[in-house]
Image (cartoon, rainbow, N blue to C red; front, side, top):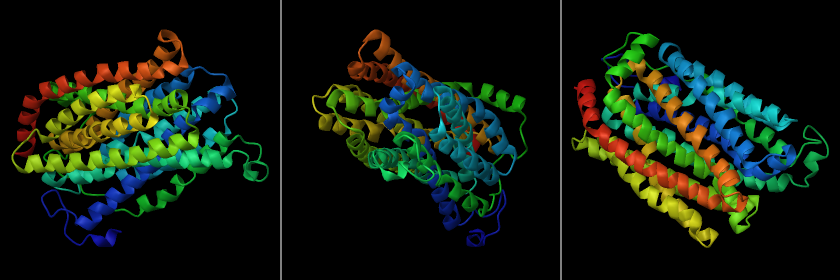
Length: 443
């Protein structure tokens, strides 16, 4: 892979070749797909895991919101600092190896708390990928061409989620009553346990590919290492743009995680679908609409930027999410699963547009040696709100407000309906200061 780069590299030299940059995009996307499998397939296991450990919706939601979400948040900032000050490809490779092992270990859990601990391990490992990956991409592509590579990396999230639902649903169906669970390494395991092991294993195979990459030379006006205090001071200087951006993009994650985690339960409880039907139906919608939304956002952001819109990523993100809010509130109320999936497709198309915009916008205004750290702060805050609050609130509302698992559709409507207006207002507040910081950073 290193042989694809022939041009001289340096902070003021030629950018790496496009082939080398897109190889990095491809590997980061593959790692992201693996991570989405490891964190998403559990959403198909709501009912068997609840039955296995005698849980209610609130306790199951805690596996994603607290065990995964909170510890993902805790790990993100130190791993982001490591990405700014150490070899990024080694950081990703090591964390990828360990999160895959913990994903497999989830299948060996004998109690709720064993499963809780393995989900923590998956979360800590996966916290490295986004800040380190975005930092590497910003050193491979010029600023006016960064939107599409970031989209290429981040579109793997809906693709990975969709494949996890399709593959996970089919795998769970195939494992039910399978002879594989009667003898050999998987003997004595429940189908959901065997599925965790089989899905976690492929991540280990990607580790050597990351080690073959060449670590990119860091670029930008700030190449000296920043201390944690200096990074905090930088955030303080940029608060007028960063705070509304963080709050707004946290609402995006809140809606995204709420839909990803609770849509399988919605389709099963409200419309009577089984795991395989949910996997194929929701999985295909995630892949087609989620992926295209991310791609379109990258092109739209680059197109607006090429015409002088310094705030292009925020405009694309806010406009897209406003449309997603309307369809997202209506989708759970539909009288048939097919109408619900159609509106969920619209929601996922427009609701995924902010993801590449958020990542690109930060890379364009933040100095090089603070990119991964501030990206980590962004991921920490948005995940804390999005994954730590959204899924838990939906589970708690279903348990204690509506007091009926079949009424989960109303819990989803309330959460989505409250989150979207907050995001749009925050994007509007951030536009002017963002333009000022973009001009300072890019000249």
